[in-house]
Image 1 (cartoon, rainbow, N blue to C red):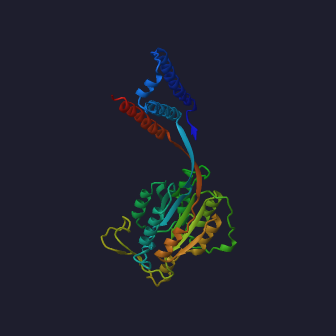
Image 2: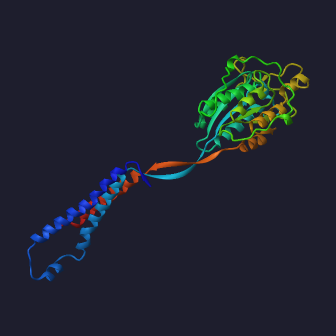
Image 3: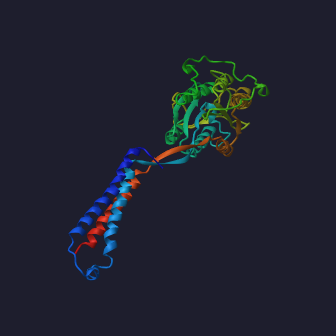
Amino acid sequence: MSFAWPLALLTLLAAPLLLGVVWLVRRKRRKLAVRVSNAALIRAAIPRRSHWKRRIPLALMVASLVLLGVAAARPTVTRQVERSSTSILLAMDVSRSMCSTDVDPNRLVVAQDAARRFVEDQPDGTRIGLVAFAGIAGLIVPPTSDLDEVVDAIDGLYTARGTAIGMAILASLDAIAEHNSNVEPTGVDLSEVEIDPSAGQDVDVDAIPEATGPFEPDTIVVLTDGANTLGVQPLVAAEQAAARHVRVYTIGFGTTEPSQPVCNINQVGRDIPTDAPIDIGGGGGIGGGGMRRFLQIDEPTLQAVAKMTGGEYFRAEDATQLDDVFAGLPQQVETQTEQDEITVWFVLIAALLATGAIGLSLYWNRN
């Protein structure tokens, strides 16, 4: 136990002062008492328990003063508590392909449900931020420990055209840099990034150097069902994350047999006004090569991003697998020292002792 105001312990001198005053008063009374020859008769006239009845209230009052003196010094105790030191940026793909119904009822609904459960299961102190990306990437919720805010934002996601995985990683890095001084911002204005038409390039995962620690406790989790079609290439963004020692975990979601995307009214953007489910397939149909490539996951790129940054790539084809992936994401829990002030307990006990002393004194001297 330690004290915030140790000098206040000088108030403990009140206890011996009180005892000294009581001793002086009793000594003076004895000097003024009438001397009698038969002391035995006086002892017989005094009730047998009067001796300790006089001392119990005094002892209680002295103990109360001692506790108040300790309370004045504001005592604190040190305890070790476990807190999550992780800040997670959850970057979710909200491209129109997330309406594919190969996962019932469609990919986005299942992804939202899994993300919601993941957020709700986080330990106290975990900060979670949400980035949504389609043709562009935007920070929806900055990293916060108010998990209800994140859940509400997940429930409100809707789709748009395009898939900008690289921009999502950069947006997540900039969000981390806002609260972690060890992570420099990327300095990229995401609103002015030029469209890169060369998406879907072949990636040799074996040629990618594997990142080594130490890493920042902040992590990025990218969930996507397709390939990068707009903006910064994912590997370029991954280089930025690797340089800042921020791990990127990638999740490829969806089956190998994608079906026609069908969005419900809550999942379509404001550019498609309707009150009925929307079929957004078009083109050559689901059997056509163009549409199938649009819905398929670019696993080599996602694997390379994870390897380059020290993260890990996961594959999930249904709700159960996606829940397992989220549950397997790492958490960094560290032990932190916390100081708890316990002044109120000393004051409470002192008040009870003082009340007891006064009550007993009044009760025993009521006649």
